[in-house]
Image 1 (cartoon, rainbow, N blue to C red):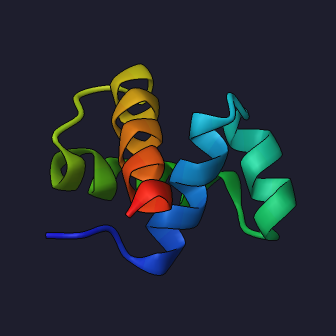
Image 2 (tube, rainbow, N blue to C red):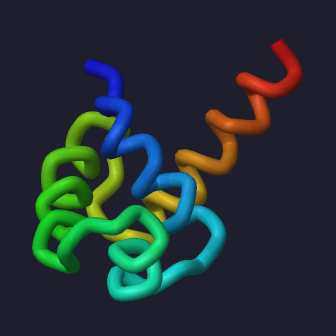
Length: 67
């Protein structure tokens, strides 16, 4: 299962090292919404934490850019 568009946007920011507060401000959403997106997307991409999610998402992004 692939991340939703909203989850992908949050992951893009996580991969850039942004905090939940920074992500919320950038996307005009609540911090709780950022946390909810992360909780839903971790199992979708096979991550158990934020660091793993960032690494996985960055590697997927690099693959998408090359393809």
